[in-house]
Length: 148
Image (cartoon, rainbow, N blue to C red; front, side, top):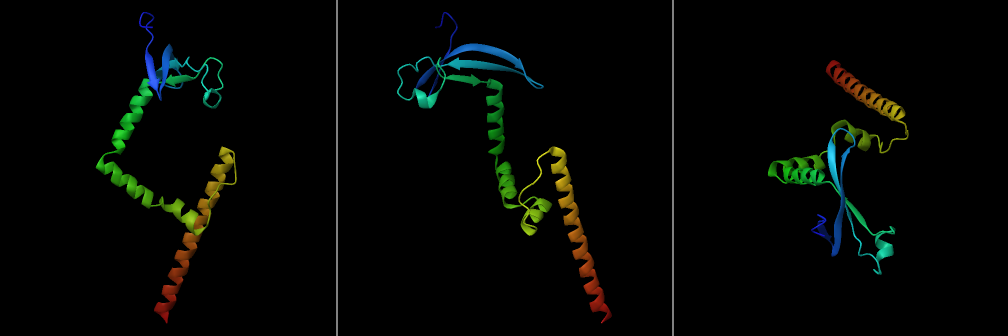
């Protein structure tokens, strides 16, 4: 295998050999994808639960993606980030929290993007009108108390 420049990767007790490396430009950024195959599936009693492939189980690994995921995990593990995440999980996001809690609005009924935007716009207008009406009623009450 070394003479053919084939690397071996081990995962959960199975050996995967590097089959090919492919350069891909899907989206904006180029990436290198490594394709690994496990050829030791023959005779395995769990093969039907593990894979449907006739040639053995395959893996696709993108090293850059793994690096970015590890960097994100490290960034999230700092004390400052932990505190921000804790605060975010405690607090609802302002208006959305009020709409969900107070108006018991917990799902979108439209499916197409334009219709979803329209539905959210109408719900937001309704929320603003309720706020305006409540504010106006409170102002009237304070004016009546002051004139009495």
